[in-house]
Amino acid sequence: MIKLLFLITFFFLVRPCTGLTNPPETELDNLQSIFSAKTPRNPLYEWSYSFASPSKITLNGSELGACMSLISSISFDPLSISKNEMNCSYNDDDFFNYLAAVPGRKCDYSTGLEEALKERVFAQGYNTIAPTLLYSISLSLNRGNVWNSILTIHQLLRNMARYQLTAFYSYESDSIEQKLFWERFVDIRGDLSERGDGQSGDHPGSWYRLWGIMLRRLEDVAEKRSIPGPLNPYQQTDAEIRKESRNNSWAKISAVGAEVFKVVGFIPEDDRKKVFVNYEGAQAANQLAHFLNTGLIDYPLAENQLERCMEHSYLIHQ
Image (cartoon, rainbow, N blue to C red):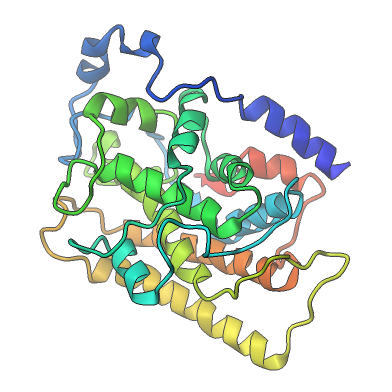
């Protein structure tokens, strides 16, 4: 029954790809209005986001992680977590340099499905894409590989957010495509710079950082060609439980460190509250890691939890 519900939800929320590699032509008819609607408040962009929430939003990372685990548990493809299906061989140092966007890094890790995900994004309506929907789409594209699903999201979103910083990224885009892309994503902050009143939240930056911290945490999860399920859960040993607890703590520390140790002048922004997005991303990854290790969801689920997840109940408007 739950798979049927997911299939119906997925059918209506994830419209099939129409072969688009660029925004639809109809969206480009009136470019003047696109850029004259609001004066950009974020120095990173030549445009302003149109759907900034007028009220504060709290992201509940634990519930998001539980939702991602639930979506994973009913995947139509066999679940796995493998780092052997990327464009480069996995290496701890090289992958850290990738996440940190170190200039001259050995590899920009990718899955080759970033353009396919981009097409799916442009097939959605404005202000409709929340983290659970994006993860559902990517998990389907990546045939159940959880690691690659999150990497595909991170690589696409980071490139679309930071393509103009050519010293750190190599990606072709422009401000028109960038705005049309990010208009499809819901506000996950509630304190974006577009609100004014001294707010400085970065819409695109917050979105891609959420997935980057998840990758950092999931590096610790052992590769699995099959994930335990609720009917045959894996009982962790005391040593494994202690290790998972340590990894959970390190993920939260990394969430803070990602902002504290940002190179001065790297990006002309003042968004110190992004650390809270990082932290909740770590919380989500901790939930997902527990599911990948045991097959169990360590979070109280409502009877209609899947429906709640797809309505992004983990984004709490205050």
